[in-house]
Length: 236
Length: 257
Image (cartoon, rainbow over all chains, first blue to last red; front, side, top):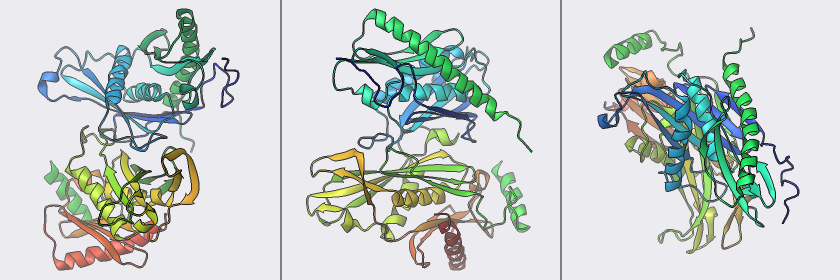
């Protein structure tokens, strides 16, 4: 089977349209919105702040906690029951691992940096959108960072390697589908999140990771622009 | 700490002003309502009052009617005080604050008969529509009550039925059929601090309130739901004045719909 043309007309290496903004949640220490196609994420950062209960504290450095949550009305199918699922717990965990390498929390012993990711609307690629928003929110909070983190899902639909699968591609009826969420530190090219479900050859995986690198560097430009825009001079 | 803050706020109220320079019964401006913000919901709205920012989405499900009302659908209101929206909120199951918020919004809609439950009946005794209304604050800078109630009403106004073939709901294909709304209940929460009455408290004011009364009223000023909160009691005179303010300010909020 051959996948000749993407259903929404994009090129195979083209991500969906992206919008990003920081400082969208005034009560948070840092915040950001990241929208890719119909997938829409908000992230808020609180901290470094006191951590309770005390046994969770690390006297050497601050810790990072992440929470990923889909709002009840964010699925194009049935309502998502609030309260967290096994899926959202796992995504929270891999999100934390994806973000931790860019942070330096040595100056904040016994403290916590909390990252809350909420999705009002989803259509594939929500963990990656959440990670993009969260890394911008961490920067907006003024934390010391080695790099940003950009994330996108890449994969294979039938015989084609492609970037940023949408819902119709994730659930492509004929042939095999591989869905590979990837998060990267764009400056060093280091990979901080890698998951995969589906079938793919090793050579194809290596090739599609190159495509992810390109897409992440484009996302990185959008993230940087959004961060700069907050401090753009106001025209009087 | 709150005692200092309270004295400061009371001092300002004496000279008819507030921390941000507002008059006592002024809402923060602008009050903005955006409809249809969430494509995955059957209806949605986002309300901003000053920096307070709330999203409400409506999902429709097919279920069985209650045995005592076999020809009526129903509404379910849920609220989650997202830890993303306020440094004092913690993740976890809804606490009493979230439950009260959801129930007060629920009563405003239910008791005004804004939604005719009979029009949500598909097959009497067997199948009915359930409207599940979820409140998600994005930024809580005070007065979640009024912002949530307004957003819930706006989301209902935006709601369209999904496809239904008698067996399964087709969420991907919304119909053109709008949810009929009979009434438009608007809630105004009136706050008493010392001997003064204000509306639309910000985060600081919420820390020092004595009591509050949420007044839901309809276009003609008829009351449809009330909720008193706060630790201090109210006199009948207080209540009468708070109702006047609530009904009056509802007219102003209604213009934003």
